[in-house]
Length: 293
Image (cartoon, rainbow, N blue to C red; front, side, top):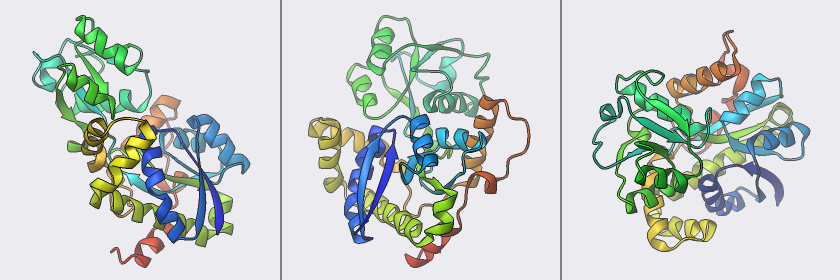
């Protein structure tokens, strides 16, 4: 049994990674899951203290800063983010001139929220006001107080918002791709252990298929990971499951959006080729092994 260490920053991803453990066993791995922040995870990966990382945004920033890492597969081509608003606001266009709260500027929810606004023909920098408004629950309280009109929600806290009377007016996964997580590893591992990388990729694809096809088997994993009841876990599953693919493929248009956003945040104005930040050659081998065309 080969031991690998995989770091991860998202609780939803962690639940899904736990569901991959059976698939890892099938591929001959004893996988250790480590939940740490993105910057720390990238340094650990660059130093060889860990073997794989599931995040994309912070991984791209680390690669563009010079760390010898590459993205090798994508398991979530669309993020599980959505706009929740006060009940009197029915559409995204109703948010013109309104205030939207986010946890932090520059994070995934903030970037995706701006893409949603732009998708509906509004200028995200001029037509709405963005404010940093604290925790998920804190933003819902501010919405109750009339201090916020909407927020970019994540799973499973969107369920809390809906219970408080704030409807989801749009989900990003219904609009566009924007790769959110997958698999990143060191260039050295790609060169020296390509068969191991392929088996890890293959395990991830099998796990995504399991989650998409086995609702009843995945919900208890969410309950255990989040320490939530079945009602909340079921709502979480139904809210995010469409964001996972079943073949590990990277959507080129969405990857370009993510890369362009990352460049803008880092004030990089040069062209960056996909090959500079990703290597999907082993993914294609894994797909052939699984009969994916």
